[in-house]
Structures are given as structure tokens and as C-alpha cells.
Amino acid sequence: MIGLDILYLIGGAFFAAMALLSGADRENPKRLGNGLFWGLLSVSFLLGSYLGDLINGLIVIALALLAGLGGMGHGRPATTTPEQRREGSARYGAKLFIPALVIPLVTLSGTFLFKGTVLFEPLTVNGHPIVDPKQATLVSLVLGILVGLTLAMIMIRPRPVVPLQEGRRLLDAVGWAALLPQTLAALGAVFAAAGVGQIIGQLAGSGISGGGPLVAVIAYTVGMAVFTVIMGNAFAAFPVMTAGIGLPLIVGKYGGDPAIMAAIGMLSGFCGTLMTPMAANFNLVPAVLLELKDRYGVIKAQIPTALLLLTGNTVLMYVFVY
Amino acid sequence: MSLWPLLGIAVVVAGFIARFNPLLVVVAAALVTGIAAALSTGVDGLHAVTGTIETFGKAFNDNRYITLTWMILPVIGLLERAGLQEKARDLIARVKGATTGRLLLLYLVVRQGTAAVGLTSLGGHPQMVRPLIAPMAEGAAEARHGDLSEKTREKIKAQSAATDNIGLFFGEDIFIAIASILLIKGFLETNGIIVEPFHLSVWAIPTAILALIIHGVRLWRLDAVIAREAPAPGSAPAAPTPEAEA
Image 1 (cartoon, rainbow over the protein chains, first blue to last red):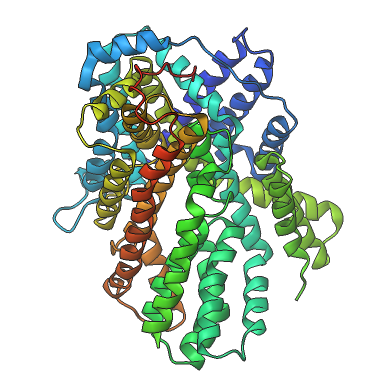
Image 2 (cartoon, chains in turn orange, yellow; image 1 turned 90 degrees about the vertical axis):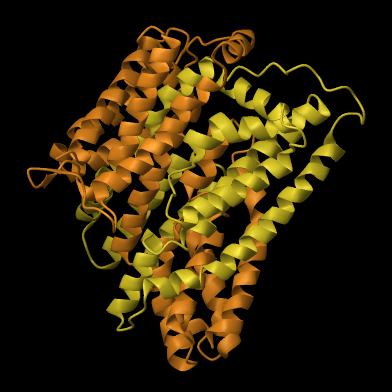
């Protein structure tokens, strides 16, 4: 059964290639730093399941120190000039879109096929699923990437090292930020183990208990957004705020509808996701990918929508929940 | 109740405001939180440190799948090398009446609509926004106004990423089998309240409509902002602009 183990082997090989190419890059004065960073990440992917928690923790700390103390440079593998790209765009035409669009299409159809739908069962061989249904989306994504890469290679016919060097060009543009989403998820786990959520929920709940139904709604929607800003994830904020404010006050004391409260409450949390650097996947990574000068450019573009929508959510909840 | 575990939040806030390296800030916050929580319950210093590193290391290891998505970069890089972004710009420049605002509005509707029926993987920043949507949004503005200022370019790119996020967030909860709906259902169930996923997803619709209206209006007005920031009115559309070395 294809599951995470195989994906981590492929990922480990990919980051090992990035490490080797980085280390050999004479154009980058900090090539050893880059080589070490991607190399450590490769070790984590290949051996993480066997190293033990303490070593894994030390690897993260080493990666953060390497990135935070300026140990990494920016590798700039040779690529095509703007003129060559315009020539390429004329030569290949709209065919260039095919490998790019094949990735989401394979991801999508693979997810259906391996996870099953109401219409059919997951794909199996001798009664065993080919792909771990829990990991259907990830496996399908990696499969889509491999199919897209194959198509692009057939069409463009570069030397085999070219896609890896082009991948490194983009990966180095992202740099340490590539690791931020995973590290933030780990921070969330530490917060949970330390009981950060419960403390905040109790503080919020005890602070507003005498304020009436409107105050309870405002505290819940705004609390969801603020706590999501802190945690970077509405899923972490939801149980805390719902246990601290939503259930005891809106449902318990004032008789609100739990389904309406929960649905709109979660979406108020999503407004917080739009405003926080802690949601690195959505906010910081695209800023780097699009080469924005302002690291917080995407957040700034989202704040007006997020605040208006949070206000709207609060009104919606107050009107419909009671 | 000890307030010491909240120290890590202070580290996060201070670190982000002071613009320290975010990766370092996040790791420092995790260590501070774990160590403070352990010390406040009477664990000795050494075990507070090793225990925290272990919790953090385990969680980091369990979440490796998040970082797998970067494996898409060789494909995107290879296609960009062959002129993908140029083709995307070129294509949109030929569509009569295409503007940045209208293009992004269309993308918002499509992203929200597909997410609402569970097709959340039809989008995303490395696979759609960088190679296709952002170059098209820039290309549409270039076709009308010639070369753009750095400020306008930044605004268009940031708005492209924002549109992907907003479409995804306020579409996906309409789909009954999405993670957040299942989380809500599970959490309410442990508190003795049974709700139907369908009931939850129906109540995601009013917010979805609001999001479409609010962000849609902002995108509609983006064209006017771009026009105001454009160099001189009536200046001839420039030749395709050389792209900065990526």
C-alpha cells in the first residue's frame, strides 16, 4: 500500500538533490549553509521515523539557527533569458499549460479513485487498497507532479539535471520559508500540550459572562478571529473559543442554535487566518513565491476583506443564532 | 491556573513585530512555551528542556507531509524556463475586455465555486497563482497601461494570492465533507450536541455570499486603482516588458 513512507522517501531524495546541487554551486558564497539546510531536511525526511523525538527536535533547532543567523544564501542556477522565454512561449504555445494543469487534475481524480466516493469503492488489488485512503490526496498530488514532470520533459527535452536546477532556483527563492508551515504546525502541538488554548478560553469566558447576548456573539466571533491570528489556524481556535464562550454563553445561557453558531464561528476564524503571518502557507509563502518586496504584502491585501467580513459574520450570527 | 505558558505568544508577537527571522521566532516560541509550562508544574530544568524538544521534534516529524508540496517546484521551474509565464501574459493580452479586476473576479468565482463542491485542490499558490494567475493579472494590466510601476505590480500580485485564499476559505465550508465541518461536528458531538453536516454547510452559505460581494467589489475597484497609478493616460501599450531575473 502506497502511503506516507514512500512519499517521504521521494521527498527525502528530492531534498538530497537540492542539498548536493546547492553545495556544488560556486556562484553562492554561502553554498555550504544551503547544502547543510536542505541536507538536514533530507535527513529528517529519510530517517525521521527512526531518529527519535529528541534528535528530530535538535534538527529543527539547527535548521532554525542556520536560517535565522544568516547561514543561507541565495543560489541562482543559470536559467533562460527573457528573450529565450518569449521564443519558448511562441514555440510551445498553449501546450505549456498542459503539464501545469495536469497536476491539479491528477490530484483530483486520484483523490476520488483512491479514497472512493459514494458512487464507488477505493481502488484495490486483491482486496487491499493500492493507496492508503487517508493519504489519498497527498499521494495523488505527488503522482500529479510526476506525471506533469514527465509530460514537460517529453515536450521540452532538457538535460535531466535541468528540472532539478530550475526547482532549486525556485526553492532557494523561497528559502527557509519553505519550512515555516511545518514548523508552525509543530508549534501548534506544543501550544496544545502546554494548555495555551484552555488558559485563553477561560480568560475570555470569565471576562464577558455578564454582558448579554450581543456581547457574547461579538466576543465569540472576534475571539475566534483574534485567537486564530495568534495560533495561525482556526481549527486550533475553534474548540477553545467554543468551549470558553460559545457553548456556555451563546447556547447555554442565551439559548442560541449550536449549528449556526459553530458554522459562522469557524468562518470568523477564517477571517483571522487572512490577517496573520502565523498562517504561513496562505500568507507568507505566496509573498515569497511571487517575489513581493513586502513580506506582509498578501496580508495587507486581505485585511480590508477580512475585517468587513468579520463584521458581517457578527451581524449574521446575532440575527440568526437566537 | 498558571499564565506562564502564554509567554510563548509574547515571543511570537514581539518576534514578528521586530521582524526577526520567522522560522527562528517560531522555534523560540515553541521552546519558551514548553519550558515555561513544564517549569510552572514543577518539572526540573533539564527535563523541562529535553521534554519540550521531544514534544516539538515529534510534532515536526509528524507534520513532514506539509513540506512535501515543494516537490512541485521542478515542474513549475521547467515550464517557466520554457516561457509559461510569458504565454500566460500573452494569452490574456489577446482577450478583448480582459482587465486585472475582471480576471481576478472570475478566478474568485471559479475558486469559490469549485471549493464549494469539494474540489479544493484546483488552485493554490505554487501550482496556480505563481505560474498562471499572477502573470495573467499583470499581463492584463500591461496590455492596457503599458509598463507598470513596482508599486502597482506588487499590488496586483498580492491581490492574486489574496483572491486564491479568500475563494478557498469561503467556498470550502459549503462542502459537507471538508475537514472543518467534520471538526465542528465532532467537537459538538463530544459536548452532547448532535448536528447534521448538511445543516452546518448550509449556514456557511450566507458568509460565502458576503465574501464574494465584499472581495468582488474590491477587485472591481482594483482596475480604477491600477489606472490611477498608471504612468500617463493614453500612452501607447508598451512592448512585452522584460521580466526581472527570477
